Length: 207
Image: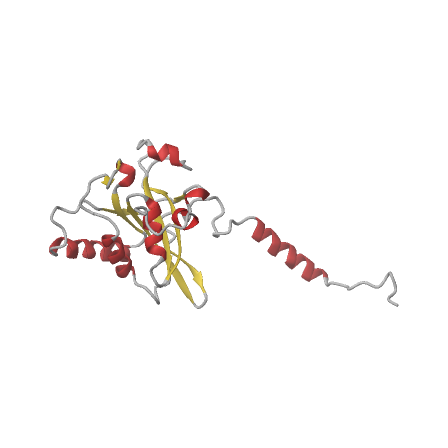
């Protein structure tokens, strides 16, 4: 019979280390962001023996755009949110007024070893009509504009080359109005917007 006073003795250093680990976990959100926003300069994050990268695109209502990018092989995660404006911590209702300057956008986290930024741009061009100014289908307003928000000079270079290739092709009957601009803070949208179509068993906004 075990003596009631016998207990497992844990070294003090182990206790301190465990405490620091728990403190770190508790102060970070599940996505690794402490305060709910990501600055535009954060283009990569560690993943195994290489870094994941991020891309931000605006192509109209973000529900369908999110669903489209989730199907791309090499994409690890997609979040919908707001970017390109002047208000901090904007709400969906505020963005819908068109006064915050933000666009509905998606932040794509991808593995560059499996899918290139150029390939993601190919998906961007085909998932919306880049010739519509401040609208997509029935959705109208600057929050529905077509835009590419680049994180690095390399992303900007690839984005501009991709735009030129689209303009030189015969795919569009009207001029492309897509903006290419430096990424700023990305504000994740409310939880009910994340995986909106998936939660409702839908594949596209048109269903």
